Length: 351
Image (cartoon, rainbow, N blue to C red):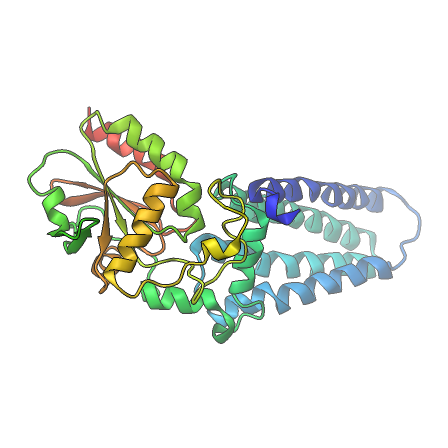
């Protein structure tokens, strides 16, 4: 079931469900202060509070304190869990064990507030960064890869972000000169990236990605919508195919292709490894072009990954270049990759 459950739906449903215990605790806060009957300790609620504190400290807090590098949206989500789960547990535990009506009422009210905070600041907010074609099976695989105990040595995600981003989050800042470097066409011609935009006054949308990045595949519809809307309005486009995001021999995600239209049902048909030569990278680029009907012009990065590092574009990222300078610098992928965010900048440049 997890394989076909959209992640945004799961997190939004969970956020809404949390309103029920929040409402119950708010009601308990009111009845505690208005009912004159003697207050007794609740060992059941206390046990729930202890569990929440222990879970928060053993899992999300350890991931944060371990210092593993994660996608920014996941890092924010885990950080909020690390802060709010123990907070909910402590205030709930105090309310359960203290018999003074005013203290108990305040503790239950604060617990209710913190649960709402958890629901909307953590769960609902994360859901907004996820496409509806991103399923819980893939999300679970990503969380497992972070290292459940927070140790860097156990975090494949940390190792990959260090390898490909050097620990950086930011891309090339707006206003800076667009970095240059060699790209290779699918016909084998070697060119400079700047040759695509240096002699043109047209805005230039630069897309970085690979087939093995789920978010690149799942946002392809938005990317094509962007392309079709602006290609005849004076905007040029180019996709640079980079190092694989989730090859089988590195950061592997279980069953990540199962929901793609082109999936044959045979995992061996979708077993992709890190590319070692430029021909292998061109082959993967052609696969992306064929299986996703990629409409944007397509080249590949050099095997030195010059542009990947220069633009800090792993695993996926978007830019707009105009007059040789960066005018739009997209957020770091995977979850920060949002083709729809380019429309406003292009509208301003084309009017």
